Image 1 (cartoon, helix red, strand yellow):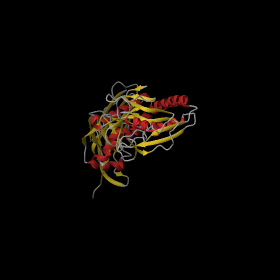
Image 2 (tube, rainbow over the protein chains, first blue to last red; image 1 turned 180 degrees about the vertical axis):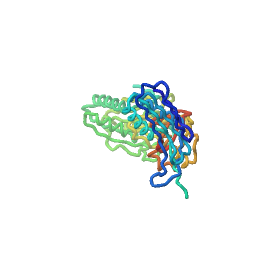
Image 3 (cartoon, chains in turn yellow, cyan; image 1 turned 90 degrees about the vertical axis):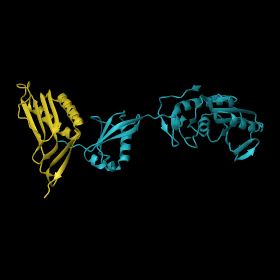
Image 4 (cartoon, each protein chain N blue to C red; image 1 turned 135 degrees about the vertical axis):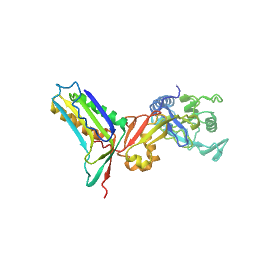
Length: 132
Length: 276
């Protein structure tokens, strides 16, 4: 499995390039997911979210989650880009692209990744309420 | 039998500083006490026996010893004071006098530890004056000291080197008689505790609560994550309400409570994560 894990300061730059080299022809499915910031947090209107990341540990945890995914599903490539810093409402905070031979294992692995990420990857949100 | 102090055993801190290191385990004491009981039963069966324990150190030894004696006997305790504040008879100052007549009986005196031999000699001399049929001694511990060579006891549990022993009836400033094993007390001055320094990092609102992002913390070597957490919570009490949900990592890995910390480790303390 090819792997590209990045954590960097916002804004999120969604790659316009195709899937990584070497998987063309083998992949029957390429899933793209973008996590976005809503304009409400609970019942409060917000301007956006200030993300804080413990970058070294977050990368390490993403890699360990990727290891688990690799063992469970026949994934061909996995790219995870997460940003920290200020993300205004409507902006993207995380982008994941996952290629697999068939769509079923792709959806399962994607769901697993996003669920586990919210429990283990040390990134925190500080919502900024809308003023005026 | 002769025993040497074990080095690797667990250490118990004491209220007067220093530590108690386990020496003779409970199981070993019980095994040896049963052997002594068998020996005494064999020697004293059929006789009119008065067993006299010297307070307070013999309480557990007496209790364990007598419950394994399989013949009828009379049990008594005597107390003697080293400070002369009890009632005196001869050169002995009793805090509790013998409660039964000694004359014509086979008397066995029980002592916790034989050190200078002074106490036991005095008790034996006082009882001998009352004309017993026979008079013997049984000690739990016989401490080998280079400066004293007391008359050897008739029965001996363990011969030990010159250590400050506590537990199983023996005290340290009145305490620790209730320890079920025998330990060696080491005063604080003789215990060297190595100190390690670790880095502590707070994240997210823990950083706001403490006003600290990165700091150093000194801990005793061998310290576990649980002890470090305790120290962090007492140093930054504003974290206390969040302690149940707090996550702890060492380096880039989540750490369990019993993980042992090493010098230079970086311990991160943070609230539940919320990526995505």
